[in-house]
Amino acid sequence: MAASIWKFGKLVLPKTRGSPRLFKSLESSSVLPQHDQHRNLSIHEYMGYDLLEEAGVPIPRAEVATTAQRAYEIAKSLGSGDVVVKAQVLAGGRGKGAFTSGLKGGVKLAFSPEEVKDLASQMIGNKLVTKQTGEGGRICNSVLVCERMYVRREYYFAITMERAFNGPVLVGSSQGGVNIEDVAAENPEAIIKEPIDIEAGIQRSQAEKMAKLMGFPDRAVEQAAETFMNLYNNIFIKYDATMLEINPLVEDSEGQVLCMDSKINFDDNALFRQKKIHDLRDWSQEDEREVSAAEYNLNYIGLDGDIGCLVNGAGLAMSTMDIIKLHGGTPANFLDVGGGATADQVKQAFKLITSDSKVQAIMVNIFGGIMQCDIIAQGIIAAANELNLKVPIVVRLQGTMVDEAKAIIAHSDLRILACDDLDEAAKMVVRLSTIVGLAKDAHVDVNFQLPL
Image (tube, rainbow, N blue to C red):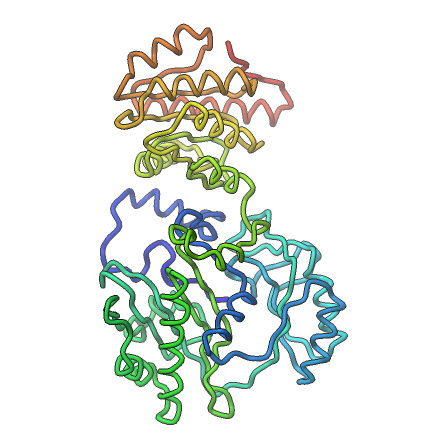
């Protein structure tokens, strides 16, 4: 499945504010691309097929299988000879990924039911590692067995919300079936955009214009336009989608327009009225820590580093990660406790951070505006006592109730390392993490048990 062109704001006209160095480090992260947990909910390809079919959009014949035997039976029932077996994993780059079973590629062509069964047995129950999953990979619990289509031409089509247009926009290209980001970088003129008035909705004239600009032949323009309208009205708007991507959208050998592959993200904020979509969520594809964080209204994203971060506010959290990177450290997570966290939420945040065995030091960076620093201090103390923390903790507190917070920590008998200067705090936590790491490498037991 092709990666979304909206990853990290590419092709979005307004420039994103923030540190270029941080955004570069985030973009290279093996975890972030698959996570938009508090904004988007993603569903499996086969679920997207069901929505497409329900919306009146033509798709190839396909069925999902959770066992190799069932995959074999589906392949026989299709009776088309050549079929495609697709691992159902919520991550991009499946085709170039590798399974822990040794199989290379999560999208494979098969020429017999027996071959389908063999491929499915190497996919189902194994983890697929792609450029978006990180080294841990994602479990594959099912495969989509799909008839192979012989196509005349492949196109790219998407609908997304874009601030540059203050609403939804159709995005298309005559160059489908490839990474659309590469197309945009090498030939930006090949990307066509058509903004939609959110109140008036998509007009047939707009859909037909889009089809013509994308290069559909006259015989297929009407069907392509109808497909665009169905995708917009019956999926994107109906189910509060934030992004709907069809890559490739094809014209087959008989001139029929088909959606071959779909990627659909839905707005988490609208799930209260989208029970059907909410029920499609596959929790096995999500980080257990992120699921737990969501239960406590914490914004958490796991990364690959060894310095745990607990911060209030997304901007400050990103700045904290940036300055840690500047001084040679690597963040283990993004964790924003928000502006109104309770002591219990802070304690839960520490549980999340310390559940990651890679964490060798923790940095707490709080600017008290709405958030009161004394609440953070109480949470830190509760966590240190209850969790028996043995990693060094560097705390920087500024703002509302900061003096009270410092007094609480001072009288707690917990020798938490305090530092008022952000730069010095970052240097300190990086040094401490390095010490712990060197000790582990030398098989020396060094514990920073609190109190020190």
